[in-house]
Length: 459
Image (cartoon, rainbow, N blue to C red; front, side):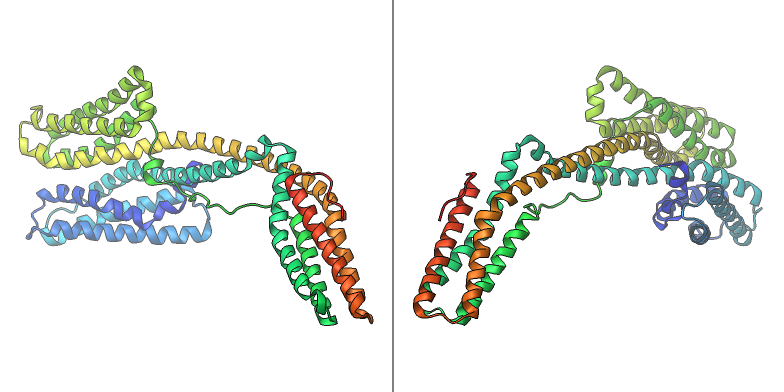
């Protein structure tokens, strides 16, 4: 999956993405408006909701228009749509602050901050979701390919004689019951064969002949359920951490961008420095934990990748929280209390986003290669098996043509001749005995064919 396919695909303007952005963006707005003298406490919530609605409309409508022109929306186009949404968010926030609270709208500052946050956060998040969905599809396709391989692999391991034996049993099990029914019917009515009975018997034998031919033209296979086309959410995330230091650095940078501007604007430079120090320490912890596990017990990292990632994220959030409340860089503790929730949410979302962006992207490349190899192997096996089955079907067809199909055809001809001419009771009795002898011989031939005996029985 290319960057354009990921960023310009359906997730670039998906309503679920907007729903996911609602809680953190609301928390950001509540933090930013703590110093805005709104007349009522609920005005920041109104502002957050209005901003989100306007931004969502811009992204959804812009994405729909762009998708009418492009199947995969170009990256500059989708970036422009997101930038427009971010700019309008700042304008809506400033207009509400100005009209309701009577303060400076700060349109430029609000728009710039939202634009920077959107550039840092939205593309990686969209890319991560696209890679995650891609991984679910790839794992589902791998499951289906492995399932098909398991169905095809027994054939090359078996001999041609075993394949032929399977075909012999399939034909015998399908024809013998109908043949026994014909024998019983003829035995019961042999003394009173009229033209109508002979014609019916001829028709049933013709059907039996056609069924034998059809069975020779198709292989016997049992229907089995196919695995689902998508993997589960949990399985899609079962990927060991890779490049922990690069992931940790990106997590730290994204979280700093999310929090530091508002910390500086609301509480001054000391609070901003405290955010940078705390986030950097958290990022170091997030890099140290998987790197240490990989160095000490790499097999544990492979087996418990999700657990290792979760522990690293929790430890990082704990370190960041402790430093925000106890470092003393910003002496006013309640500043840290207000910033900690946004910092924790930022670290959590950034960890999931960049882990998916880096780790799942690499894992998907490997899964693509494995899937291509499995599909190539499956195609080779199918061609080989088709060749084996076709050869054995041809041999079996030659074996059945004379003793089985030939006898049935001879019975049909005799019955048709009898039905079209004038015959007496003695001739009808002789015909019934002759047809019965041939049908019994066909039954013996089929039984011997099913048992793997090369030569059929004699009448």
